[in-house]
Image (cartoon, rainbow, N blue to C red):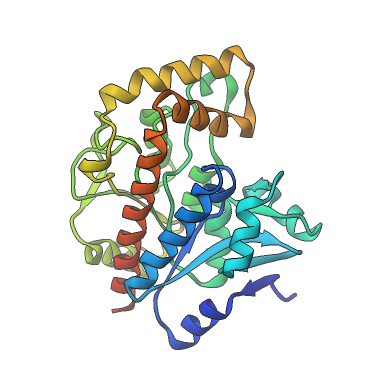
Length: 302
């Protein structure tokens, strides 16, 4: 059966030429930022990637197809759409089969990128083990996907609203290489420091590409997570973020927010509690991750 993939002209041209491509998720547009910052950021990130001689491929589900690369018109439509589904492995096929509009999480973007033959994907940060998961069992499907799907994911660590030690523990148990770029400490999304030692470190895109290629040679399943610390000038230090995160989490518990609604609620409250600084950080770190992903994609082609 033919795969329900729809490639933009730009992506098809890059594939025909054998030039590097970087996948981008779409939940950051639909669930991660308000309008118009979401469309402005999406366009800026795509432009930055193109400026490095690499093709961006924003992925989303529309009209019964998995779109690999979006036209500017479709990007605008997505940014302004209401009630867009937030898709992961469990509901990706359902949305495609029923012609629903959906934005791809890290897990779903990895699946779609792999189907399209794209090896590198830039995001903000991965999901992970939610605090209190020993009672709720709330663990992101991103972690399982990293153990299954051979895509390099570049993000600024796991989102700091999560239980980072447990997140790293599960990644280790599932055999996922966690490589921090340029420092020994695992980053915490808005902050460069988490207090946690990174399992692995790399100081160049070439090191990361070589490790990925060796995993393929050894026939090791799954992908790699490259944790790329937010630039120092753009971060909110962890000591400043910690009480903000704690307050947002307490409010979510009091209001009974659960399941897929947790992360959007916490991100919105943190945005409000930091007077918008968290959004500025988010934009800066996504750009930083996209730039590293372009370097890795070039190194894989060399």
